[in-house]
Image (tube, rainbow, N blue to C red; front, side, top):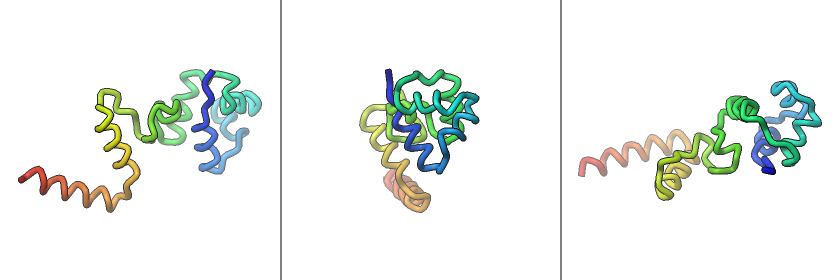
Length: 107
């Protein structure tokens, strides 16, 4: 059975309690705690609810990627690595990178 460390980290980063998330998901806090500890599988519908609540992808929750926005399933390893770097950049850094890429593309 999978242990979902990410949902615990996301919950703590959001300053939410297990009780608050349990209420949102329509379950008990004891059962929600089992999700975090890997003692119960998260039903797909509830995993979707968690992803929407935190604004992350299901792949991020499942630990398949470090990119909160998604796995980019058809992407190569190099492309996924670049996407993860992009995800970690500030808006200002992304804008500078975009301008640089436009310059390089014209060469």
